[in-house]
Length: 171
Image (cartoon, rainbow, N blue to C red; front, side):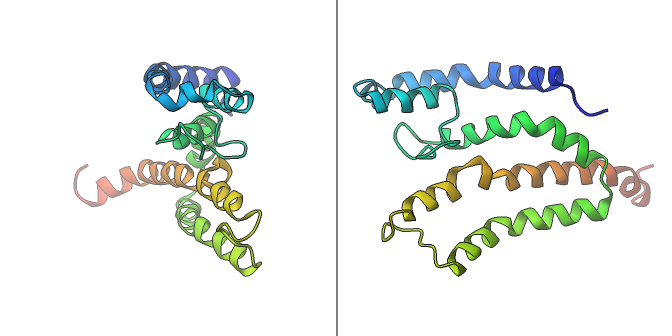
């Protein structure tokens, strides 16, 4: 069966119990967090950080306090999808898993090449340049392939573990 909502919720609860206290302490001790409290836009940005969704919306987690928390925001999105990815990729055949891994490896480069081919800039020369770069660099929509490649590699290892162990004389 497909993972149920309680499965997703219990996974998310376990991950957040382990991570969120330290994440919160890091936000509290960062003086840039206090500076954000001084303006309405700053408070809205801080609320995104507290909710761990700062990379889901512009400016994609690039304003302070940032540090490694941009990827933690991506992980939150991935954790919501992880049970479905694990279940579906756990059902996949070896050839498909290898194809998914290679597709994930080239995904980031293909996106950037398509943008360049379309004449889109990544720098400050165009009004959208920095925005586009930050979206490509920090958004969960453009970073999922790292996580999925890991799930596919894990599924491939599990699928091939018994035949490999038999072949190598371990069984």
